[in-house]
Image 1: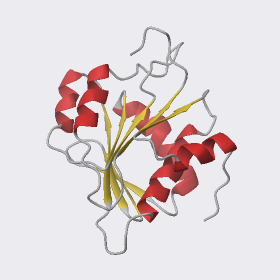
Image 2: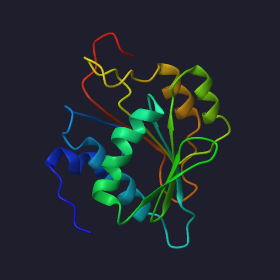
Image 3: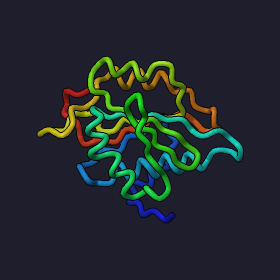
Image 4: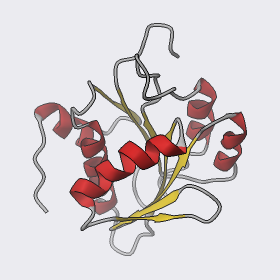
Length: 172
């Protein structure tokens, strides 16, 4: 599969930093670049290594279902698949990775992060979108998700991916 990336998207997909941020307006290709990053990192695993384990979090399950999941499937549905999990949320599976998708609708949703050892975490739209559309994620979500990163289990480094619209100055 051939992907087309802007210079900024290309940097975002290959950057080796532990925390990588894609900042841009709606429909600028942040989710697309995030998927490419996950696929590229999964390809870097040594032969025979276990799949990368990740977590993609957004403010609500409905926002995942209405925007993020369709965006992933639109461009990468032939390469990856997303299944609904009985206990809530979704499981995104692709070559060399497995990623759980959850909406953090309230503070009790944070319990979904407990006990997970992860190679990567993707925070989608952690800042509220001015004018509605996303309530954003609380700072505790970042802190807890970061504490679950173990990395290295599949021969890669650990990383947090953040894709978001510009935040207001008061957001964490």
